[in-house]
Length: 263
Image (cartoon, rainbow, N blue to C red; front, side, top):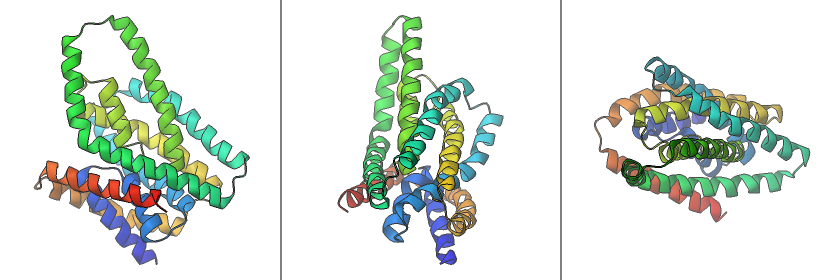
């Protein structure tokens, strides 16, 4: 079975490299639907997988000054406490395994569908927002206060959904930053989101580990197969149509979301 995990990690790693879509959006539903892994184990294991595999990306972006640490910290002000409180609530109320799995699959379904829509419409939305920002002239102090509040609230939302479903720190987090900071370069948005995603997924993953929701053999197999294939996928992705890849991955995520919703 461990060889199967390595192959799964390699397949998802290849798709991550090709498309840039985060592992949680693909890994967790594949583990649940394709290999019938317990949803709780799939989420907990994938959170640690994401934290480990994304760490090198943060260092890469930091060295190139593509991370706005003040924004990452502001997001974390909302996401980290929300993640800890979510995990505490799930444990404190002693929810049955069946109910816990139902919460995960429903949340995961919603997040997959939302991620698919974000992938399809994000470029159009961000270009419209940037145009609107250039045209309008508001009170910058007021705008900054509103933006700060919305960033923290966005962090709260991400902390909750990522802790429950392992999905959202990547595609949804990036979309939120594009909306709130439309004048920022895309590469800086991606680097900042990544810098926020790593501690969030690490803390959520460790929280699941304390509840014995992480499979060490599964995690090891996914890492062995996934890490080299992410690099290979990133090289192959340079030769393929970005528009086509986005359509394919959005269709996959939407289909997985619908299938989970119908379970």
